[in-house]
Length: 156
Image (tube, rainbow, N blue to C red; front, side):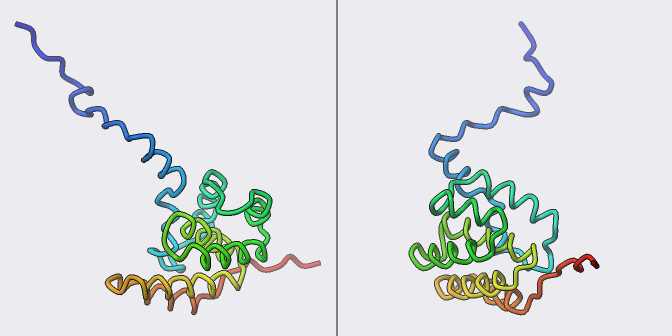
């Protein structure tokens, strides 16, 4: 009679394989892209911005690649234009909304003053669609009142 092998294999069973569709969905909308509708702006900082940029570079763009690349290079006008268009055409929920709202979140963390206003508007719209999620109204108010912390400009 042989003894079953013990050790790490028993303690850490292999995770069940995700179906390919689930893996593709995770690549399109990783959990970090939900920060805009969960975390208040005061809790976010430069490390979040760096991580968010890496994720945004890896996900499927919600628009033409050229425009999306301009947004990821830091063009606040391109980011706002893309976000307003996607949020108007596709609504405030879903992977595309999470992607463009996360791009706005990135711009807000980098000092853009328009991005928090657009985020607050999107959160208010989302709160109307999901009345049971009361935190969205408070989060919208926090984004509307938030002033980005911008490092001082270098002296000439």
